[in-house]
Image (cartoon, rainbow, N blue to C red; front, side, top):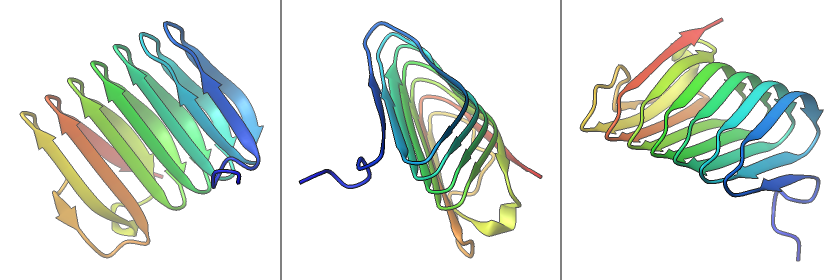
Length: 149
């Protein structure tokens, strides 16, 4: 049986290398995994799910629109986002790095769950009442996220 969410999509796996996605429109899901490399995505539209993970480097997302969910995990690096838009869930996780940037949409449309162990956090730990979900966890780093139009 085909794993759910991989029916139509792209899987990119590498180690010790950067992954760079730009100016693409993908109708399925995208999964990008590396270690000792940066993951960059700019001007990207994805229909389903965008899952990305790296160690020992940063994740940079800019002008990324996802109809489904974004799930980004980084260890020993920063997670920087600029104008990320989602229709379902935005899950950001960092260990030994900060999570910074801007999310498209108003604060009110998100229910939020956030935790910054050993760091500053500008988000509420719990806020209900939104259709979209924002789940942010930084261990040993600060969270600084703003909502933009």
